[in-house]
Image (tube, rainbow, N blue to C red):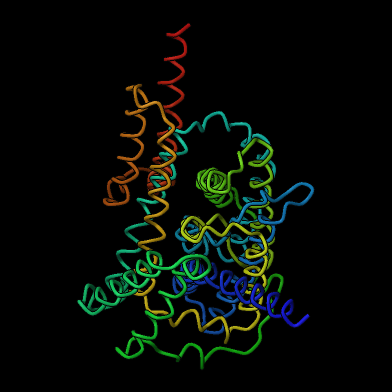
Length: 432
């Protein structure tokens, strides 16, 4: 009896640690959006605290809707949902010009549109053969790497960007992860990322790079409140903007679904896509009601699933619980914000690089004897990388077009789909 209790306790502890690792992997990306939105809209410190807390709480709700395979929604894979960076600029722009009510009303309608078009959008699965899905996942990995590099250099908001101490700290963190991954097995190997982050943060504290001010200043309890800042107002142009953002998120999520399906040995079918899109749209609608944000899949957690090899839904459910707790108790959640950006950058390189590597692996099933496939990969990945490295390349285009060209993931995905339709359809016609 005692032995069984110890074994169960060990399993519970391992599950908790693996879940915490998932939280830490997405936490920085999740909290930066509400912080930037609050700063852009000139919100007070109290309002900013609410935005951060409600966002983390709603990330938990949104992730649950996706992981739990209900009657109509939920893809049932270890998918993590967080606020999308694609909506950052539109939220600030519309929030400033038209007000918060219009901003949140538009977000709500965009979620409703995603729900309505989910069955139609899911039917385009035939547009995603390996040459397209592999290219998209590769592009996702490529476009994420610059974010990790900025973190490694200390973060874009620091005055001494690129200071050698930041790079050293990031390298130490990455080295710890690699050593653990190389010389350990089983559970320890699966939490290599978490150990690297914790040890890196401890080292950073001795370098004077860790501050507990945010923890001390945070409240003990805060609950999500419907229409905390405002109700809904509806304006056509604002709605259209966020509908485009919603479609963009669906395109990005499609690549994540296929990547996770590949990792988990679960073929992604039309019904799976539909359920995934429905969960995403529903999460956006609920989030807007609590004055939170639009939600989409987080690619960094895909890399974490691949590195750790842990695909258990139990881990994801505990992660959901942690997000709900962190979102309800800002003082606890604030602990995750003390991790220095160089430490996160060192960990991100391994996670984002793994996404890139998995995209290359998916491309392995592509028929490289066909020049058409090589050209699809070349143009889609090339443009995706190009926009990522030179984001101002299409700055002079109309704003409607720039919604698609400002993101390397979106532009590369659209190019891969269109070129596959043109080239491979033409090839089939020639064969006939």
